[in-house]
Image 1 (cartoon, rainbow, N blue to C red):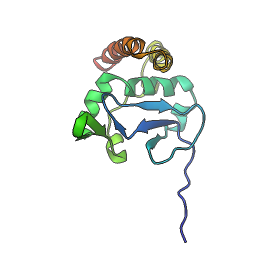
Image 2: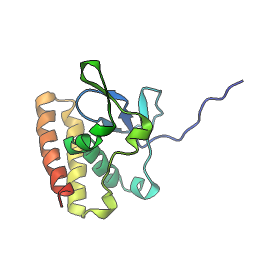
Image 3: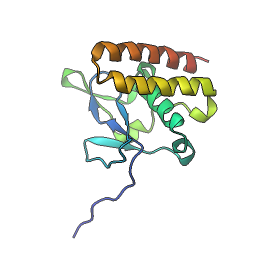
Image 4: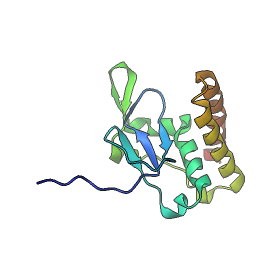
Length: 142
């Protein structure tokens, strides 16, 4: 006899294997994942305000966050990276409750733009990522 693991619906997903950047995806559809994605759960006080969630996801999808996570990544042939759940927990993260509302809203808006840009072509996505990277650098250099 066996039992399938039961978990709550995650707030976001993290790709287990990726090439260039961390890939965190907001779970707006409230779906469960199979084993090809890590499930991400935020604290209740973060989850209560969607702006908090989007600000964190914007940060986690940025190049500065990737640089901070690099030492925890496993590198495979062809430049593929893999991130294990326990390693993902060690990625330094911003606390949206501790940053000013203007910065939080800017990050959340950039996350929304990034989501749209990812469907409109790589050039637009790179443009938004560059802006996001600048905003995150300003935030973490303070």
